Length: 473
Image 1: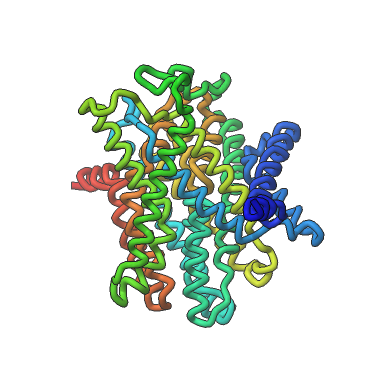
Image 2: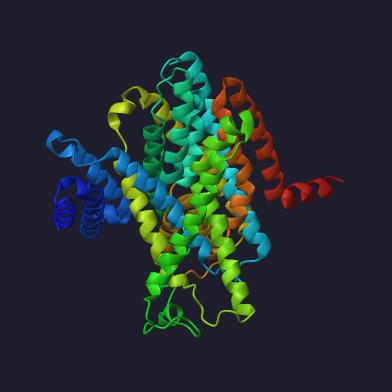
């Protein structure tokens, strides 16, 4: 009896609520941000995501010393990390089908644009940060910091945190104190502003020039009641809630991800594996989540075809809601984890990387979209530019402004390009783990990125290039 009382009273301490308090703060910030976005016209017109506004609110809250102790930086980083992995698992479990509006080749080409933009951003970042390391701040700045540009702009807060932490570890081994996490998360936060603000400005410029079709109409929700409970799906009257099934599937896949990463960590991979592979494994939780999600989805679909399973257990509508929740939480927590104190000496590289990176990304994505998407080049541009400076949801937000009913293939291209982009981008991720090990490796990485970019460029613009050569003959 006495042991039971002791166990019960052990929960009556503030410490047992620490993690929940962080989620309370995130939830409150999201609600307040959504209210502000709906009430303040400037915010709603800017298309800045409510999640980013919520993260900024927490940053403002941290300014006050008596309140800052409520925000646990480590907890926010951990939440960002897991929200990224869980969000990708939920997306991977969805049953996406290529509609007639998007051909398989167009989806592959869109994935190539995504991966090639990462390469362009990486080249741009290194061209800026290598000279800064040599001539500006040799002791407190890391030479591969520029590679956080594609992680912050192209991938978002989750990957910016993962690789920022990896870069910090390698910098510390070289005697350099580099706040990689704060640097990467700052790039990610600025990326959301770049995508939203520049996207809206360019949208208005196109409308004034009458280059943008004025498509009016309320946004048509992509899912209906039939999608929520279609034929052969688990009915709401089952003993287990339909949402519970989706959450369990996501958690099951993420547990498989943990087992894989833990197994690799404990395996004997030799000197090269210990120094190169193991440090990267934990940062690739989103990639393993995608692969295992696709595997589990195929097993479930194969079992249905073999009539081993009678019901449809995968629900795209609910998986979309789960991934949306994860990414909203990721953006808020990732922004809230930024520490401005660690960035006081990093203002010059941060400004240069973000500003030049925004210009290069804008120009390259616009050129690709004008070539690949005749008839809907601007719809394609806004969807891709929003994603490649923020997340896929930001691309959808911008697209919704110019194509509210998703009449063009732009939305479908954006959704389905994920798998080809991961395949194309995997070698790039390996280089991100190779580069920070030494200055020599960074130069090799820069050279390889230039070669990879040339290959992507030839693939994307192959029709134009080879057509012009035939014309010359």
